[in-house]
Amino acid sequence: DILVNQIAAGEVVERPASVLKEVLENALDAGARAIDVQLEQGGVRRIRVADDGWGIERDDLALALERHATSKIATLDDLEQVGTMGFRGEALAAIAAVARLTLTSRAEGSAHAWRIDGTDRSLAPAALNQGTVVDVAELFYSTPARRKFLKSEATEYAHCDEVFRRVALARPDIGLQLAHNGRVVHRLPTGDPLRRVAALMGDDFLQHARSLDADAGPLRLAGFAALPAYSRTSRDAQYLFVNGRFVRDKLLTHAVRQAYADILHGSRHPAYVLFLELDPAGVDVNVHPAKIEVRFREPRAVHQFVFHALTRSLAASGA
Ligand code: ADP
Ligand code: MG
Image 1: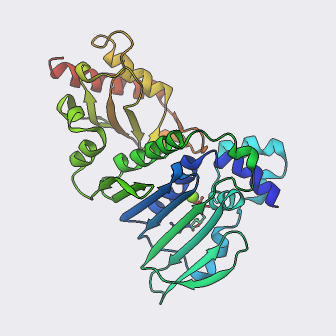
Image 2 (image 1 turned 135 degrees about the vertical axis):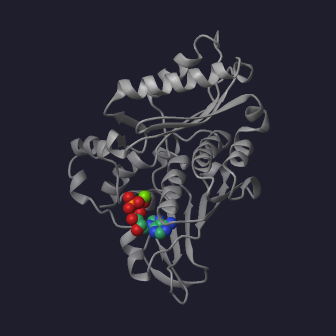
Image 3 (image 1 turned 60 degrees about the horizontal axis):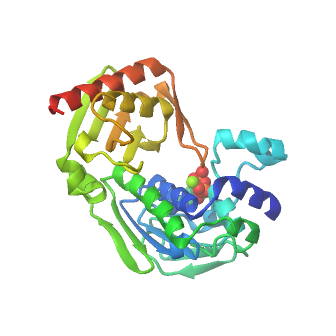
């Protein structure tokens, strides 16, 4: 069973950033208002995420580490299929299979916290305010072949930072902090979404960006799109969210690039933070951990809407 978990882990856990993404999403799912992230050595040595969400009851701690959908990976062929269906209920089990995981949690109304050791599944009382601390140490210690594929500390850290930024941009309503090797890198208080964008993208971006908020029927596009003066030669400031979830989507990216086509030349890339909202029934979010894709029921309408909303906004700016 450990082997099966390790195979599954290969799909879910590619590098520290994929662990961080899963653990952050769990904290959000638990209704956290504040999340504290501590990384050591790019997250390879340690990823520790503390949240103030509703926590996990003592008797549910062991369950949280169980692989729920056992039948999905009965064969190697099934792995592909599982991938397209997402890994609901698999993340913690997968992480526990390839790292030293401990889960400490105090559920609402409990007298104290409990800690479970992901390796031997032993339970012990612990001290903690309400919420959960997920501690993931020595990633891939049990699978040296995987560990070999990790890049430098700086690169792994950069991927973690990117995962953190995506969550932070999408959720200005939540207080977030990130420290790397004991040094606080991001300290993001709750509040004004504009302040959040400024903190993560820089005042410079905001000064050179147009804000937009357009809607057409069930579609709404809000956010910030930088004027050509702020364009980049590297592709590092493109943030698209669909219903609050960061996505990398060909159709949307194409619509955005098309809107910039007449004003942005050469090899320069636009910078933007855009939030597309639509009826959840109109979009299929593929939750494969490695991809972040969406499928629209009416791709043409979405493309046109995004293109026109952005074109109008950029033109109104006098760009
Ligand atoms: P999934 O999120 O798909 O349910 P996971 O393996 O990521 O699967 O998590 C397993 C379960 O552990 C979750 O369903 C949830 O009940 C619990 N859990 C994990 N992290 C937290 C957290 N930070 N706060 C509260 N519950 C959590
Ligand atoms: Mg999860």
